[in-house]
Image (cartoon, rainbow, N blue to C red):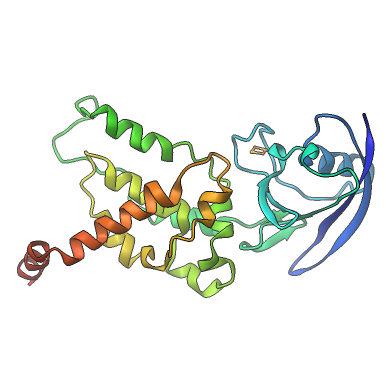
Length: 248
Ligand code: FES
């Protein structure tokens, strides 16, 4: 069954913009991204939107739908009432390039600041032996599709542009935690997490976990364990003494 839905879509570029009203056809089984595509095809050919897989796997189509960060391709129209006005805006934490497309280069910059997996000297690929429990633990974090909705919703940077320099956001603190849990990684992730990537800014409100489309328990399984490891090290008297002696 088709019906006409009311949409308000953010249009603009260069820091200027406004919500534009549309009335558009909706068919059974469609998702919000289908409606954005119909708007492009019928009423707004220059409406900019980023997408790729339309299967919830590439992380490109992140947007805010009725104020909540969501993937456009995984948000079914059937979740809304037919007479509801649906508001679609770009992710708020990143600068708008045009319409629904934001500049997410902050995230790639933060990704580049994290040293890659660092195995011990002398152990070659093929010689790593891991317990299944360690494999499974990091498997959860590797489901991340880098939609950046966790970073988008994190209040540390959502309303505080000035924190972006010192805070890498849940996506990349999770990446550091994943590497720190890896039995073969020898890089010092704990000090870097605290000093360079702003782990201390996170006050575990779990906003990131709530919006993750892969249902990764970012706060409980990555950020809190990472905070515990950093605290253990900071307040362990033997570690403290070792740091004092060997850093002279
Ligand atoms: Fe790939 Fe939506 S288009 S996740």
